Length: 361
Image 1 (cartoon, helix red, strand yellow):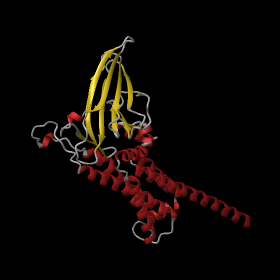
Image 2: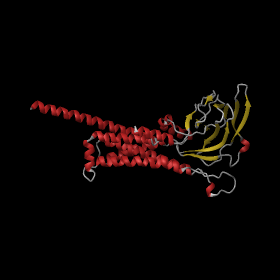
Image 3: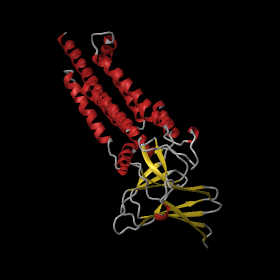
Image 4: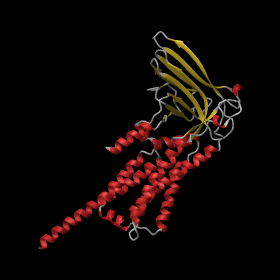
């Protein structure tokens, strides 16, 4: 129960948008459910017969309506400029209609038509083009039209950021899709290389225990994920992410840049904590002769306690919102299940032995 409460607390304190990946052949209007929640609609391409993407959202009086438009940022070249055209009208059905038309403006090719934006949760970079924000004074429907001239884009709708259970479960999938959308898909290769290194270490140390190999897989799942996040953070820092909110000379305190605090907490300190815990466990498990031998032998005898400790580490690891941590939890659970199976077999063998002794007597 305490572990579940920890998960709920972690989900509640993480502030981020919920990603949705739009189909390339979307030629009908898409309804945005709960538009006050922060959603990010990722679109990669338009098909030949699709000329625009359309979204609609219904708001009640007092709701904050917000629409943001972002594109990829993989280099420091000036991106195309886009603008919002706002058309408002009242309808006979008793609600207000607002059309937000997002279109390419070739006459607005200036140096400051966009600003860089860094997302510390997915470790990705964007060009922020426009933001429209308004409070609904009555029942209001907002319809957004995205011009087909820009292919990879993100349409952000809503202001109430927060990770829900569905986002938590699908975080690894979402992370991979965002990297794929940005054109920088590095995470799978980082994980694969880390597991290859784990196999090399397993062979070089002369190990022959499958459980030790699985624990090494778990440790290097963290390392592979951590290395990938560090690489992408360093890469994004080279994209001139710092900028000034005005055209006036920029003072140091006026610079808007990358949020290192959130990034470091999610992608460095939290994974390192589990990496250290699992490494200590591995050291205790493999040490049978030095100062830790007593603890190692005790865990070897008490398999149930050993398995429970692994389950706790694996469950807690799931709350770190890391693809590598999810994979590490899978390997940890495998080790725990094998430990329980070994403990059960040892118990059965002990019962058979006692029974045989009684029969002999």
